[in-house]
Length: 74
Image 1 (cartoon, one colour):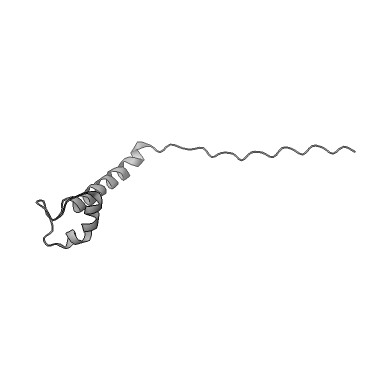
Image 2 (cartoon, helix red, strand yellow):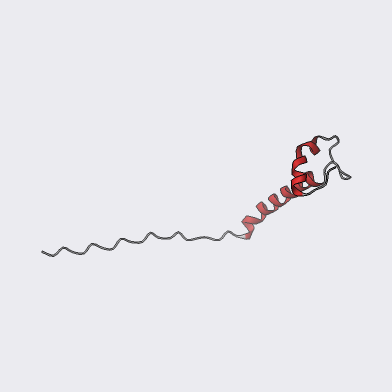
C-alpha cells in the first residue's frame, strides 16, 4: 500500500523590514546630538575660560575623562 507523500514543510516567512522615515529619526538625532555636544563641553571646556559653573566640582567629576580623550587640564 502506498503512503501519500507528506507535504514539504514551509519555510518560515521572513519579516518585511520597513524603513524608518527621516521625520521619525530627526527629533531623536537632534536630541542625542545636542546631548553629546553638552557632554563634550563639560568634559572638554568646563572649568576653563568658558566656565559656566564656579568651583572645581565639575573638573573633579570629569577629570579622568579629560585625560582619556586627550584634553589638557593641568
